[in-house]
Amino acid sequence: MTAAHHTPAIVGSDDNPRPHATRHLQWRSEDDTARFAAQLARWPGLRNAYVTLHGDLGAGKTTLVRHLLRALGVQGRIKSPTYAVVEPHEAPGLSIWHFDFYRLEDPREWEDAGFRDIFASPGLKLAEWPEKAAAMTPPADLAIHIEAIDETQRGVTLVAHTPAGRDMLAHWPA
Image 1: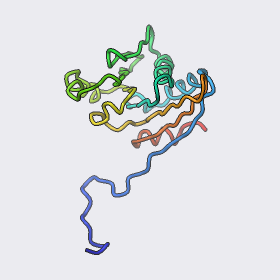
Image 2: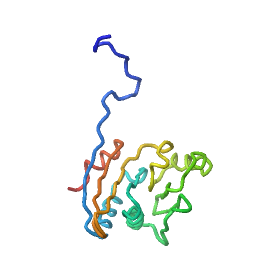
Image 3: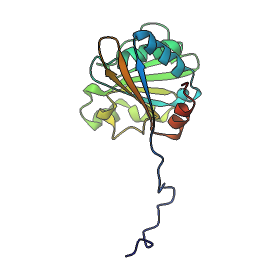
């Protein structure tokens, strides 16, 4: 078989998928985290996005979510979904679900909890420990990788996995 002879592409597949777009940031304080959250809250595509948060325990994933939810207009107590797995929130004109998949052990838990229906509905989905549910979720529009450098500084890498995410990074302030 020669190089010119190959199996045709499946209809709708991309022979040359676009590479993931990335952006590297550094947060020197929690104020930088809050400023990032405010910028992210202004992204129009966030209203129906799936954003994953990656990092070790204590890296700042939940802190980022709290700042983002406040920037979106969520009122009242914002608690971590560590034990509940998901916490729903409402902002003006926006449904938000904050997942923490850390304790997810069995794919049946995903189905039994109705998460498929949540992901099929409009609204913002934020997920901590997304690797625990990766086989069941769509690709993240934006993956935020947070690495603690010391008590206050964080190295942050934004990775866009979808056209919507790539659009967001293309328009992200320098």
